[in-house]
Length: 550
Image (cartoon, rainbow, N blue to C red; front, side):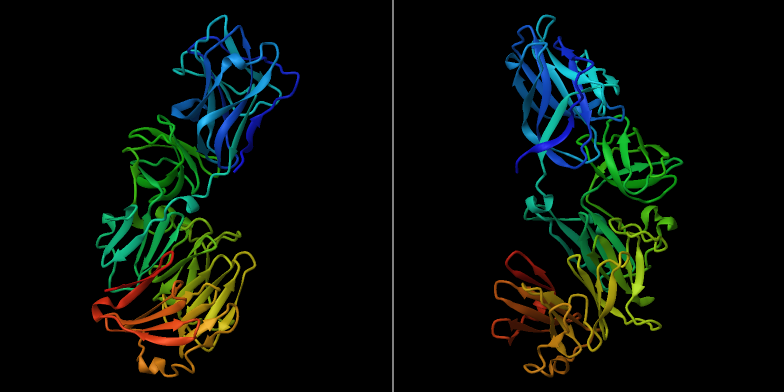
């Protein structure tokens, strides 16, 4: 992808300050900038000239900045340019310095371009042009190789940064496999190697239904009273005393000693001792005993001291309201169904209210405050005509961010759009429901298949469902003696064989009965597996369907 101009300070002629001169080997001139969007910086253009005949290389390095706008830590990337090729003062010209390696700079994080000249002396130097017309961010200067810095907000170096959009991470990096077996959670600790998330051991209720979904580089678990999170992206800070003002979700925190920065995602408490989980945005890491500061959404100052160095995940913790505080609402006590829809965590299957569903705030899955009224706020609802009690929800089927299907015991409902932004909900079918949480699949033409009241159905959403076993297997429900209390029905589309696997398994024994529906011939073919291999789940990989059993 071609690089484009991203950050700049052009100034306005006539330029008032001339420039900062590098006339000693320990001189450093710097300019900070804050990206408006994340991009991969590949080069920078600086307005320069020379005095005398410098012959050394100009080196331009990229650094992170601390809260005082001073460079911190090691250089993130660097590039060089031959000073002998510069124009001579008083003429100015722009020169592009290409970095040895591109580096992803993040939205809202302050960086600095730091320049030095090898072999500079009092007769041979380089000057970086400055201006004070409408200074941008902060100019830095050091005469002792960066041991101390003078910082100015009154004028800025003239510069441009060039870069390209970073390649989306979900398209360039391998996805991680997460699997649950008995009371254990396993994850792909490296490519092809599974490691156990040991904190989760014994924290899965094997006698209760379990549904998991991925969101924001985490996996959310609904397992009746066990509502949990496996967190693969955040780091963890702990403190003995949080201070008067707790961070809000999304607050940027900065370490006073290391300059490390993190965006807060979840906290275990809003007062006193607590654990804070967040996405670190810097190479620098938080240290033990350093003062961490920030500003909350209300402009209040945040300050607390860490009691350990930051810890890296993965982590296992309870999925509940932010800070475990009712100001962020209260999740249901129990749930067995869950999915991600339009950036919201959706749960249902609460035995106390089996007809209800709950959606978190959009983009904030630890916010269950249903009383907020903005367009992203959390929502609680059910599926019914006015004045009636809704049907028992049996499965949640999201289709991208377009619509969410609520499978119920004897009916199916469809939510189009977002419930806080003009979305509508209506009947999809009042003559059949959907058997269970995994009793459905999609084919490669976006047709929905599911196990309903009279067998297997097909629907081109939002069209009406049609029973496709009506003629071929009219008595399939009776013949299989389907009972929701003892059977699990799983379905999956097989791209390689172009058909649908339908797997009926007795949970207690593994006794099973299975069918393959050939989409080309529209025929059903029986399949059988040993009791030891009764299918309990289906996993779709790139080209194959994995049937996972006892």
